Length: 107
Length: 114
Image 1 (cartoon, rainbow over the protein chains, first blue to last red):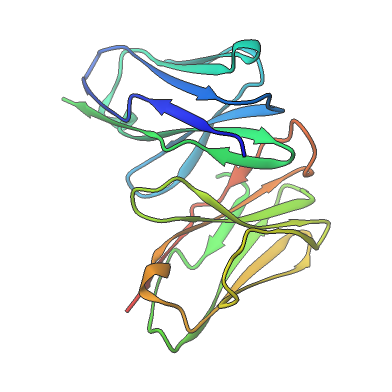
Image 2: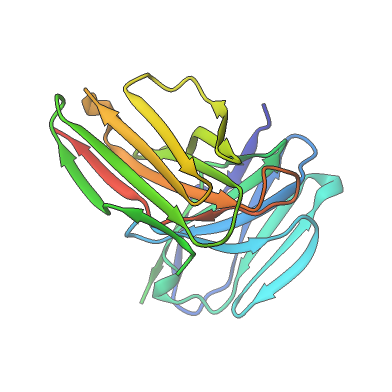
């Protein structure tokens, strides 16, 4: 099956810092989603991004499908950004998740 | 509010109990999914239903029994579970199973097996 690799596995940020999370995938995909899982386990849709760039407030994402990667940018991080960020690729109707990046934003 | 509601949010049960998890979606979607998330592991797809028919069963033990009575409701019936089944169970829905359809997730049921 398709492999989804996320990096880094862990990230500690000072409040106000910027960061980039990466997602590599091993094969062509129909689509890609970024999620944020908060400390209570809720999985929140951030972006649905097959290609190109999207922005939502302090977050933005870029997917380069031809090179099989996607990037999630967090700018001016806040403590509420803490949690696990998952990349998931849609291939043949199935969503395959990466292992996630655990982000901790300290005050 | 994601449009996908799961109940209960938390469940503690013994290994000999029988319980059910419920998922309801208000998005008019045709496909629904059950995922399992164990500690320190990525989400694992368990079951997929499309138009109320099961189209995927990812080698899930028979002690987990899904039911999809209509396109808005999905259940996961549990019986004689094992301690390793303790996990967060997430339900999701999408417009269809086809290409380019984003999945929307509920808040999950956190299950603990004593």
